Image (cartoon, rainbow, N blue to C red; front, side):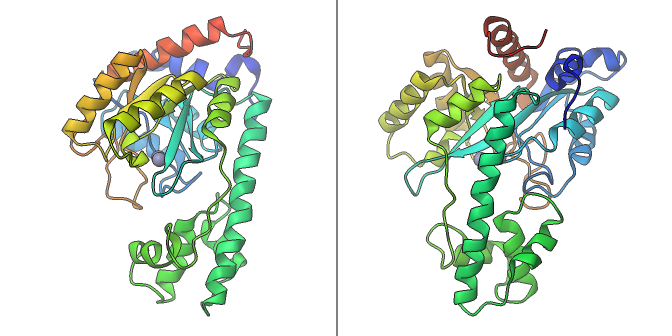
Length: 318
Ligand SMILES: [Zn+2]
Ligand SMILES: [Zn+2]
């Protein structure tokens, strides 16, 4: 959706969030990585913000895959209940199998025309991918059609979880996990990879949209050794990477420590989030494998965004 310039979402909700609720309970914890029904989560953007309130979080970033469609709704609810909010997006970049590289873009300006063309491109990649997966399933004598999948998605971004849900309902598999293992995950019988942006292009576009690019859950790169991880981070740094997600539900204490050290060594900001997906994953909002995410991560992110915005001629928030 389009907002008047003066109501740039991140500006009103994040920078001046406090003014909406002078009496709000202060909390030292936040969540900077979660998904809503705008991508593959099961809670609406409003419901995610309300849950953040219930979990006593003081700030939230919504980071749906390939889209900012949920951001305006979440920002409005965050403003209403008095939680600080920053818009985000999570983009999958090209990376050799079996690893995956996800880049988070924080503070992207919803009014930036580059952002619309970026999300159009990313969603077109998905549009292209889903019919190919369906065709592969049909070739395996599985009864499934695109209209069924569209109905399952209910107008939201169609993803593999929607296809998986149909396979479970029709009895081809026993669970969502079974559907992914047998058919939908890399190596599965009906797997088809979507077209991805190169890391350089993804980072460049996040920057161009006024956002800060952050490497999500580095553990999922499945690097062979610490040297390889360092090389990847250095390469991304040259492309404009601004931060590393150090706290995540897939990171144990040792990894958190390692990523914190890496971020500090390279002068990158540290972020953290649960990667909450609602009922689609056994993860609670604000809780990354038993660890909470300090408020300082949000404050540092906002400080970096403010200095980026004031330094960059590419964004216009005047
Ligand atoms: Zn991810
Ligand atoms: Zn995620």
